[in-house]
Amino acid sequence: MKHKMIYADHAGTTAVTPKALEAMLPYFTQGYGNPSSLYAFGQQAKSDLEQARATVARCLNAQPEEIYFTSGGTEADNWALRGVAELMALKGKKTGHIITTAIEHHAILHTAQWMEKQGYEVSYLPVDGEGRVDPAAVEAAIRPDTILISIMAANNEIGTIEPIAEIGAIAKAHKVLFHTDAVQAVGHIPVDVQAWNVDLLSLSGHKFGGPKGVGALYMKKPLRLPALIQGGGQEKGRRSGTENVPGAVGLAAALQEAVDHLAEESARLAGLRDQLLEGLTKLPYASVTGSRSQRLPGTASFVFEGVEGEALLLHLDAKGICASSGSACSSASLDPSHVLLAIGLPHAIAHGSLRLSLGPDNTQEDVAYILKEVPAVVNYLREMSPVWDKDAQKPTWVL
Ligand code: PLP
Image (cartoon, rainbow, N blue to C red; front, top):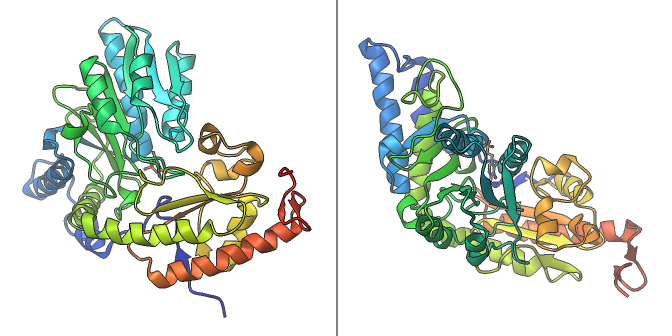
């Protein structure tokens, strides 16, 4: 009999929580008014949208007027980079320098590459073997023409948490705007825009039990980026388009719930995660990717030498386990993940990556099942692998 599905890809996306769903449902069929309409029915939707904004602000230690709803993390990331460039251009600085890292999500990396084509210079800072950015390297990279530092709060592939508060203090001291892509952090670790000294922060609903297609950009007052999306002037003229009221309400409900249970849930998840990290590295030629100490509570990531990540995922799928091998976008390509290369892994080893990301629905039984099935699949694939020496039981590149 096929085993029940074990969903271990919460860094990819999450189910909408029952509470968030319950909060959203009335806005589809009853409270469906347009927040821009002047009659009371529309104004009720407007007031509920503002409540959602206030909730998000409270969860981040921000002010409600600093929160702008977007279509998700990707839009918030695009807006942060392109918006700062446009703002500076309006002030007469038509080109400039941006500091980011080699391990950002493609929403940042591809936007940065696009900006290079527009004449901006971008420094892609390296990371250490655990995926950590050195704050001193950030400081050293700042130039008189640096217009923005954009560094993720936590990495989506290896779960490493970056020293954002330290970098924020440096950015503040040098009066350079600082953006963090906190899509993997919000709802999973404590996030405080003031303690972190960030000017801009991106978040996404579907990573913490809210719906897909809704996110937010935090913009510290009095910073006001020009609009990325033009139109009817919603979101105080900065992000046009009829507001996704159910989405914003669902995002806010999920975030409040995540923040309310953060301490106990992150301790529970970290316990399960550590069992995976310990258990799966008992296999020979298996290692953890990312940081041991500065790691998202639910994310366990590995490389298994002599195994192809995609084959591993398909075999795990057949056993009912949903996992990932790096970022969803890069899994369609044959190149190994840019993140794993940036932490110094050779191509051959980076190909054997696995990310198991746990969430509220995962149990001790799930972990026991994963600890039984992953080694079985890895051993099976190694036996068939051209790069695994069956006699010596080691990868062919190990002498
Ligand atoms: N940034 C990071 C770090 C992510 O992990 C993701 C999603 O995987 C995004 C941005 C994009 O967010 P969204 O899916 O809401 O566009």
